[in-house]
Amino acid sequence: MAATDDLSSQRFYHGTRADLKPGDLIQPGHTSNYGKRNKTVYVYLTGTLDAAVWGAELALGEGPGRIYMVEPTGPIMDDPNLTNARYPGNPTKSYRSREPLRVTGEVTDWQGHSPETIQAMKDRIKGLEPIDD
Image (cartoon, rainbow, N blue to C red; front, side, top):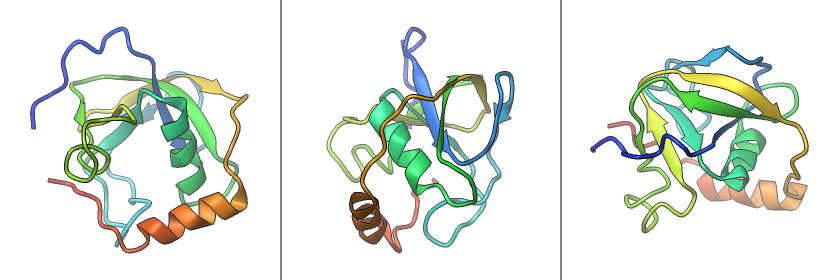
């Protein structure tokens, strides 16, 4: 899969439960939030706040969901978990990278989904394995 070009002016987000601060790096190698929970070989980012909200709400772990503004430190590519492999195009502007993401700030005024909507999504993705090739 080729790296995505010409995204230098795009704002990117990452949803998680981790407590981070500007300058921190989000790196591959953490336990996945999905499927068999293998170690990740990618870090994930999105160009839409809504997709980052889902990331924060679906992330495993303790603490509140958080959304960070991030910048990639290396090439990024379309995330096949949310693009052509499973959905046409890239409507959520979802990407991944083998290189770390640098936290540049935090979004604190986001609106989450209802508990029922979150549970419906969890049920929908249960057993789904990430595409990590």
